[in-house]
Image (cartoon, rainbow, N blue to C red; front, side, top):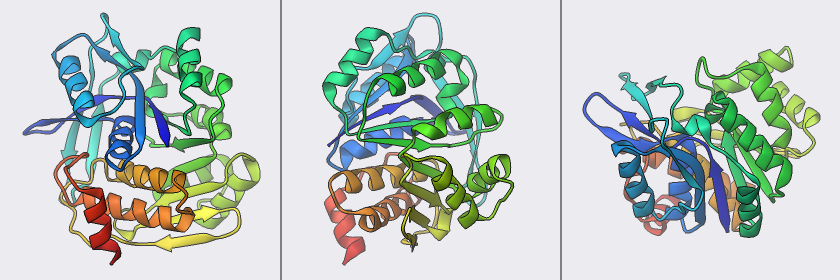
Length: 296
């Protein structure tokens, strides 16, 4: 089982420390920790943060074959502040290396040769026109069994047009409940969740699974035939940065290994809850022990 994640590798800069992050990277790192084979296609600056990031990537066992290096732009970073509920506010710095990810013909051929089971992408890296062109070139020229689109809206770095151009590629969509209402309001003149989900399935023929994440209230997993309301959140939140990415990674790995949508949702819920209860988006854990403890 192999996954390619496209987009930002960056540093989450908290008032007291900095940690490696970016949703695509967090997903790739957790997929690897959960027993999958993962790569990330991104770009780092040729600077101290970039060199430190590369060390972290290798340390997590994530494939670096598609990580590019820029001589002209700095490694990406964001300023992060947590509120009293451990909910983050991000200040994203524009025009950093991950805004300039490239996908030339040689890269496309290398991606094809890997025969990835799933391609993950979001909206943040698409704020850069070069990266946006690259992700669409990949999606237009490479066949993947599944395409996982995490909308991951970060104001002001999104637009109705950007979302409209991305949704048709998705076979699996991940969206939080606030984003679901925003998308419904943008496209379907409704904010009601089940109505938005029905419209998404009706409009986008490739889409067959939608994950609606709900913070401490778990998630609802929709298919075209049914849905599962799931809440395995039992831990007090310490730092919710990356918890949604852990949920995505848990779902992806369980689903790709054949566990089924309901079980994959449970694994994702457990992963998201665990990460929210820890400091950092990629804490240490033993996957088998964690699942055994939570599923007994």
